[in-house]
Length: 94
Image (spheres, rainbow, N blue to C red):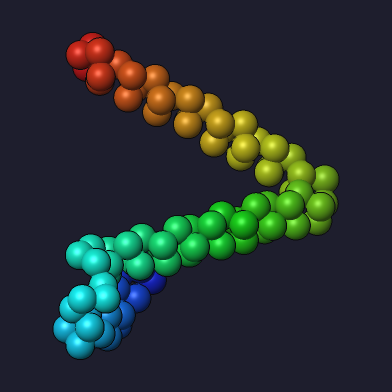
């Protein structure tokens, strides 16, 4: 996620400076917790935008609906296959 990397580069010095000014007020790992929270927000926003775009494409035309339906079927199958591969790796089958 390129935006996350940029955000980390900008926020790290600011947060570290605040941590140095107030060492007793901030817990260790504060920067990572803040960045994880921001990353989660960005991921949720991206997911919501992605879903809105798929819905808009689906509503745009019959061809758009068919393309979205096919894409979702493909995406679901891919996710299922990835879970199966992970399970096989954990079981030592791969």
